[in-house]
Image (cartoon, protein in one colour):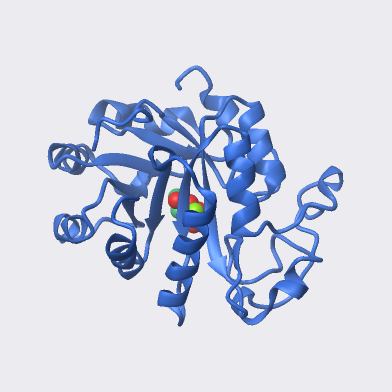
Length: 246
Ligand code: G3P
Ligand code: MG
């Protein structure tokens, strides 16, 4: 399982290529592909009406011209919002993608995907069911897909409902019981803030047989030692700074 056709990927575009295009939009995924990135990460959340969309924040304000909480608006409202002009005028007209639209575009571009499931409120089972149903309809190559979440329960549900899809547990800081949590979900990988890692912890994670992915790295110097510790891949907003490493 750990020796996959995609295991040599070292650079993952964060929210597409968030330094050069509005994050989590189709334009951002295209920008990543144009830079030669082979995998991207994106965040999926669910709206009040159950529609899964690609968006990072709980509130609409930072990355769109909408107002309010994502979990309290429906798709009819979200689909007419502009998700590009906040970033730069040339991205005016970019939309908040549905999960289906994003999956189709990423496959059209030939890229792999780390799909991060965002969840902080009620309705976790509905969100996971919606994401897995959409993936079953849209995503073709499970070797080019990795699910992740900070929410351990979300990954437990994924393991029960779609055990064939790889899972990565996300941590801001790595808890003492990380091995138990990774065993619980039969994890493929551990994803953490690169600043939460030290040599001993990194080597323990690798010795336990997991792939080790670190976010969000925009300065190559910041992780110069991490590669030597066994880190497998990074998430970066600015893939151009790492070209030649992948
Ligand atoms: O999946 C890696 C990274 O995206 C996790 O943090 O807040 O950028 O979604 P965040
Ligand atoms: Mg994310």
